[in-house]
Image 1: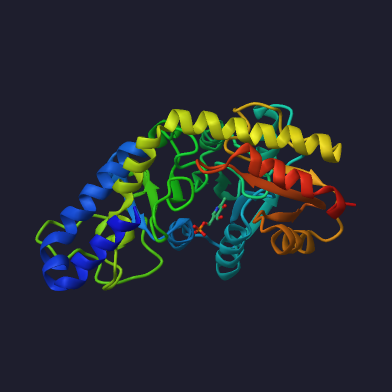
Image 2: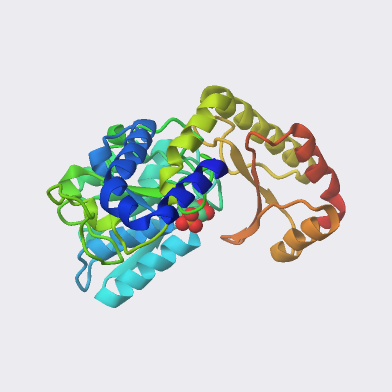
Length: 352
Ligand SMILES: Cc1ncc(COP(=O)(O)O)c(C=O)c1O
């Protein structure tokens, strides 16, 4: 994948004008078509962006909020996403509502009910993760979309952890927006993300960065042009997305998902034994995929993360979340059960 990115970069640099004027549009079409097939939608509904953050900012720049309006999030959301919406709401006089969801979750219905309890007649958008960052929990996003739409509220899904970790069929979710980064589980280079926009929202959406608003070619303009030409730049990461899909398909996605989920399950069991603390979600692939977030007892989460790196060269996030300390273990193709053993075995003297 890195070699492919380098090759695209050299091709762009060799003759930028020829590339931007005559090759850019079809190169983007090809990358978008492969990605669209992979995530279960049509290329016409997707734009390539740098990462999930850029996609979320585009949604924030597109939703028209008035004073008194509300945007509904929940307390499992990624910190930067909460910040984007707090900032957007502050500048328009709207309110960013962060609904607290009771953990552990007993059922998807209970989760959706507690999220919907934060919805009011003033809610203009619901923003939810597909897989949450601090708690590594799979949210029932199709049910969330259905329930929000019954109340006439559009839904934006923040999905960087879902891409490759689970089969994605965005069209079936019937969400309004879906944004993700492909550098995580899909192994694309940094700078490869996407934003899906449902056809009913495409006339209103625009990027956070404004440029010429069109590609340098002779086709009639479409909504996606506004995103794909955001100034003169190296888009080799976007164009390497098909190589990352090929790479993961060569590994075998079903085997990858099965094996990494079982590793996460193994980590869950080993940590429960060491700490005596239960995981936040039931032990089922309906609730978590290739990563698991486990409660631990430690005073200083940052100090533990530092110590694991300094003493053992183990890189693992230790988070402070809702009054708890959580250790989040991600299992990719290169992770072995011996890596998990090494982490768990060195924990006892570092915990309370
Ligand atoms: C749930 C979630 N949303 C959004 C992001 C932001 O992704 P990026 O930094 O690639 O824009 C992350 C990053 O870790 C995340 O975990």
